[in-house]
Length: 623
Image (cartoon, rainbow, N blue to C red):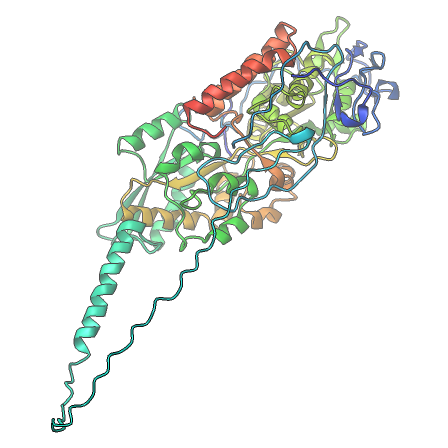
C-alpha cells in the first residue's frame, strides 16, 4: 500500500518460570551480552561461534544461566554518518502527506507478583488452524486466553437449529351432485378467460419486485442513463487520482449510466471525519476503512449482494483474517483490494559479505543482530544489527508487539500473564540487554535506508520510502521470523464498503463499481498503473492471485505468510484516534517504563489491562 514518508507516530502475574525447564521456553532473556568494541575500518568477517547464545533443547535462546556472551561483531566499511535526505518523490497517497499504517476472550486471573530475577521466556503455541464461526456475528474475531498455556481458540457460535414445518393440511373438496331435474346446459368458454389471472399475476410480480428493491436494495444492474447518470461519491485514502482516474474512466465507458466521483482523503482524523459525515447524512457512497474498524461501522455498511459475489465465493477468494473480521449477521461488509503485513528487511550486501542468510526464527535474528552490530571504541553504535527494542524510533513497533503476543499465544486484551510478560520482555532485550539498537539512532526506516541498521521489520510500503531515500541500496525482504513450532504473521488491511445511508439506486451502482475493481484483469491493471508511480503496486488481496507475485523480491514474502495472518487493535499508522491508537498508547507507556525506569513487565501490564478495558467499553467492543 502506497504511503508517504513520516516519523513514527505515538502509539501504543506470576513470576517467570525458572530456566531449569528450558523445553517450555522458546525465548529466554539472556544476561547482558558483553559486546567487544570494534574499529569500523577492519574487514568484515563472520563472528566466532563463541558468540552464539546457549540454545535449549527446544532450539531456543537460553543464556540466562550462562555467563555473558563475548561477541566480536563483524566490522564493515564505515556506514553513512549522516542520513541521506530523501531525493526521490514517494507519491503521496493522501492530500496531506502521512504514512499509512497496520474478540472476546475470557479474562485470565493472574495476580502480579514480585518480578523474578530470572529472565522470562516465551513459549511457542501449538499451531492450530483458525476455525470459522458457523453463525455470523457483528463482533470482531474473539481472542481467548490459552487454557493451561495452550494456544487460544476462536469463539464458537452455536448453530441455529433447522426448523421443519409440517405441510399444511389439504381441505376436502365439497361434493357437488348434479341436480337430476336440471336440463344439461352447454356453456361457451370466453376467449378472455385467462386475461384477468395473467394481469393479476403480473401485478403481484411487479409489487413484489418493488417491495424487494425497497427493503433489500438494488442489484448489480443498477445505474441511470447516459443523460441522467447516477452519481456515486467514493472516498479513498492511499491511491492518488492519477491512478484511480484511469480505472474509473474504463468503468464509466462500460457503464454510461454511472458517474464515479473519487475524492482522496487525508488519513489524519479520517475515521472521526468519516463517522461524523455518515451520522450527519453527508457521507460518501463508497468509503475506505480499516479492517479493525468493522465493528465500529457495522450499522453504516451494507452487505455484499449475492449478484456481486456470493458468500461462498467470497470466502474462497479472501484470506481467513479478512473473512473473520468482515463477517456479520447481514453478510460480508466490504471488499479489500490490497494485502499488507510485516516482513524482515535486510541489507543484502552486508549479509552477503558476512556469509549470512536471512534469519527464520527470533533466536536466529538475535544472534545475527549481535554479530552484525558495529560499535566504536566507546561502545557507541555505528551500525545496528536490527531496529528493535524501543518505541520512539522503531516505525510500526506496535504491529511488532501485536505479532509477538499472538505468536506466543498471549491474549492482547489481558496480557498480564507469563505469556504476555515474556513477549514484552523479549522485545526490550534488543535495546536493554543485547544493545544492538538504542534511542540515539534515527527512525528505523531512515536508519535502514542510510545503512545505519542492517535489519528492520516493516510493512511493504516502507520499501517505497527506502528506495526514495537511497535508490542504490541493495536490500531484500524476507518472511517474518517465527517462534519454534509456530506460523503466525500480522495483517493490516484496508477495505472498501458501501454506505447503508445511500439510496438503493446508488448502492446498486456502488457495488457494481466495486465488483469491477475486484475483477482479476482490473486488479492487474491497477497494479501496473501503481508500479509506474512507485517501486511496485498494491499486493493482491485475492488468494487466487497470490501466485502472480509470489516470486517478487519485495512482496512475495508477505504473501507467503498471508494465510496465517492475524490482527488486532495494535495496528500502527491508522491515525484513528480510536481503538488502535489508544490501546497502542497503553502498550507504549508500558514499554517506556520498562526501558526508562527498569520496571518489569509484571509491574506495568496491570495498567495496560485496565486501559484496554476502558477503550473496549468506550467503543462497545467485545472483551
